[in-house]
Length: 59
Image 1 (cartoon, rainbow, N blue to C red):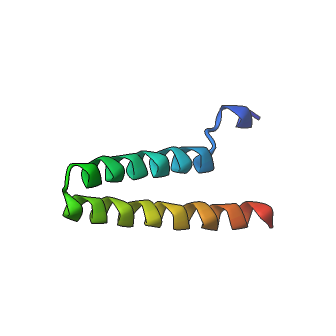
Image 2: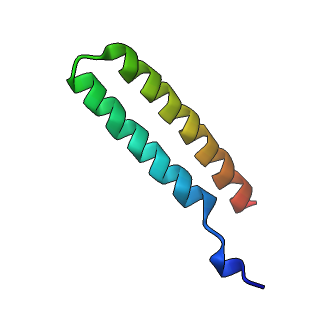
């Protein structure tokens, strides 16, 4: 009935993904390669979730 109040999980994941990439960029610029690697890995995990959700909504 009130489905228009529900947030889009894909939109939220995209926001988190972009935030992780930005944090990784700042870590790399500051020379913290270990943090850069961890943040990039987390961003890749989020991207996989986004792609999985995208495939389920297309079907």
